Length: 504
Image (cartoon, rainbow, N blue to C red; front, side):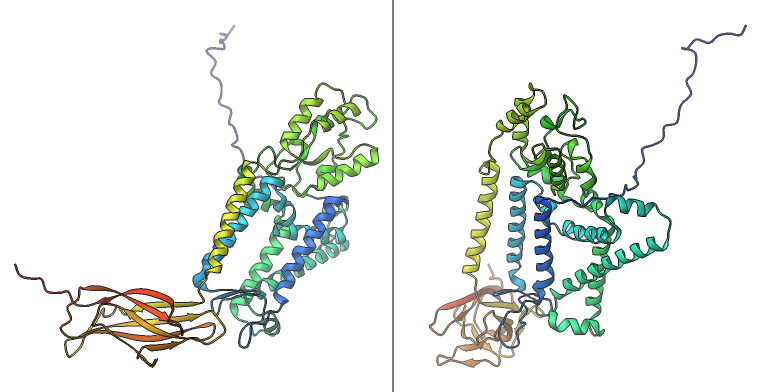
């Protein structure tokens, strides 16, 4: 008989372990159509958002002769942003920064109160994806019909429905790209130029770019944008707390799941209706998930089933985690039934809107609004930029004097022509001359503005021979209005040769 090896002496063979895949194949989501109060609210918001996006470039606003009359326009040629009566110049970009800060804080505040209401109702990805899915349902049918169509071979019906769907998608995407370029060009002037091939290459490039991104993101990527591309789901938890309204499943009422006529079961009949209508394909009964955009369509689907079964609606609802925990603790000792439902609902409290988090957001929001309003109220309509010549820093004149040259840029944000006297605040002896400028009765140069534009002037400041000055001398250019009041001042320096060192 051969020797029997003990397990200790047996050498185990290494079993190769396959590494976890780094790429997961997409499981296509087929959302089902649903009706209800949440769906109606989403339709209203969708129509409003799309109407604003496509119609705003067509709105007119009279700003006078030789000025664009489009109400909302980003004028890249003249470096101006027009928003009805508001006009923002390039050097006032901080107003745009303030608006972005306001939008961010407003989004944080809305999220702390109502969860991912932005993602579920007003996000452009949600709005255009909703529109694309509506087109898909109209052409290819609802969920089951689309699933069967994708399993069919490429028949004439398959090609017709797919081609029509993508043609409509492409048309919507082209309208989206076309509307976008109208925010940067006058819509009434650009439209005929665009269709006759007379627009610039940049216009056609951005039209193609936004057409392609709309078609790909809303038609193909869809829920993958929310799950993998958008950063908002990854840090939204910092904005939420236990008193934020979120879409949630009331497990204390629905569990254990079972047949509608079964005994000892909760209200959830495991119909999968909430899963079938979800645009991201998740099961809300699994709790809070990053993929959930808070659209609330699962609420409508569940309410429809509860209504047909004769049960109270609200098994899935907008609820706070505080109320969810309180209801679960109160209803836990009771068996499924009307008594447990009543006990759990009575344990809930009203939504707490005023709490430290929301007060903080409200305070920051109010502070930013106050700063922007104050800045706008104190906004100067006249600006003066002074650029000193640097090549060379100064010029030595034939009589021994020293001269500096300055480029003056006088900006006027009003529609009228204004005249200002220019005064140089500098050490005694320095003399200023502005080329091609008229003079007032006292001999001061008078600078005239160009309405809603910038005028340039050339100023020469001279130190006479024998005037001893430091190498750098601070000087200030000031504009005086007709009443002699200082309108705007800009500081600069007068440069000369380095003074000789005194001998010890």
